[in-house]
Amino acid sequence: MKLSNLKRFPWLLGAVGVGLLGSGLSAQTASAPRALGVDVANFDRSVRPQDDFFRYLNGGWLQKTPIPADRASYGSFTELADRSEAALRTIIEEAAAAPGSARGSDAQKVGDFYRSYMDTARIETLGVRPLRPEFDRIANLGNRAALPEQFAHLQRIGVQTPFGFSVGQDARQADRYIAYVSQSGLGLPDRDYYFNQGAKFAETRTAYGRYVEQLLRLAGERDPAAAARAIVALETKLAGSHWDRVRNRDREATYNLRTVAQLNTMTPGFAWAPFLRAAGGESTPAVVVRQPDYLEALNREFTATPLDTWKQYMRFKLLDSYASVLSRPFVQAQFDFRSRTLQGVEEERPRWKRGVGAVQGAMGEMVGRMYVERNFQPAARARMQQLVDNLMVAFREGIDELEWMSPETKVQAQAKLASFNTKIGYPDQWRDYAALEVRAGDAVGNATRANRFGFQRMVERLGKPIDRTEWGMTPQTVNAYYSSTMNEIVFPAAILQPPFFDLAADDAVNYGAIGGVIGHEISHGFDDQGSRSDGQGNLRDWW
Ligand SMILES: [Zn+2]
Image (cartoon, rainbow, N blue to C red; front, side, top):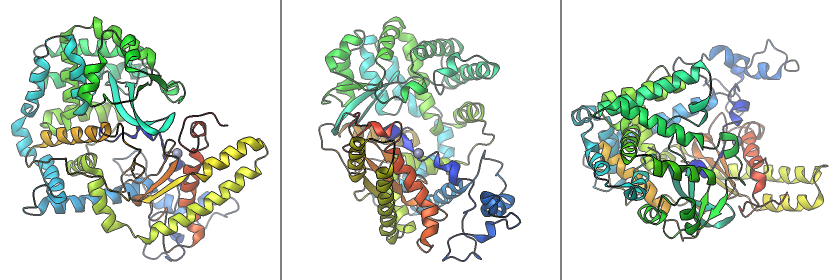
């Protein structure tokens, strides 16, 4: 499932891991003096700090910490993510074990969603049958003119189509919501996989073709081999007009404001009115097209590709999106290609982990609220705010001291810094899941309804004032982010624990750990992409 729209928050913490991942500030052992906040057992005292400070601090931890067999790396982030996952498992399994929770209550939704996901006996019996209504819908499409509405339908239920549709803050007018249209439709990670030379890419392409064929065969496709060839050929044509990752990172180049009339002129073969109506996007003030020439190329494929090929393509995309809630052969095929071949993962994650992940994807803030009640000390908010405030002062002084920045730019930079917003721990306004229906014993239906719910919530924002209480990450996420359109830095509860943050620790420890994360996120407002937006969140060259 693909529910959260994190594309609007492209600057996740990620890179800070390099600095902290290898750090020996690991979870405190019982013997560690707590008030200090640093586990001295992780030191390697055979190294002189003035010779190799990193080794001195972390050598002990490195010696006693092997990388687990099911992972490619290990460190503070993974350690905390495991802890967060375990806490959620407890919460979710308690809800699943509670008898007779009131219909429509949080406990009923969490419990029934998880139980239906874990009920593999029932899932095996059903096979691919729960998708039958969707297959019929595709089969009944009479002509190409029906495709815009069908694409909107597929997007609502979380299925990939040749372009992506989303609603978010307008990057040039951050006080309103607007629709975005982006290139999409590829089953391989990006365009390079379709064209790059070398044995590894060639093998991946062959494996992908086999995967497409296998899913279709399992679903009873008449000639799965021919269908797979047609689908991969269509994707390859789409990929030919996809922008690469570097170009997609350019915030100016990917902002192209178009009216719906202009869109229709760009793609005469594809009618936008029925699409927008079915997607719930009719009231958008305009559309931001990320890659205009991709839409023109898509128009060519849209008109040249036979309807039957589009139907094969849609059947595969449907299966690829829902394989995780289908019977064993689908799960196995998807793991073999998406995890083993593409990522080198040797072992499937246990089903409970996938179930916990599915609940989080469907109702992340609902379980997030339960997580915060049990795992977050309210006092941490005030302490964090203090740290952020002090780092802001340091950053302000840092700007003033810059020798290379002109006085006019300094004024603008200070204005941006002064309007930073900070969110700590959890949202003040929790997401309302009342409209999400969860039924016992219906894993596919629950996944479908959760996708619909997430999509509807997204498009309903059109025409409304910006919801400044919204979070782009759940509180149980071990990460942090900066949002350029909100001009804010956000620190979920799950990163506010040792070794990153410790209420009982000395200030020096917190500045050294979470202080680095805070500084990292503030800096994102002024790096090569963040600097392109001003303090109001508008894409504007002020530098
Ligand atoms: Zn970052």
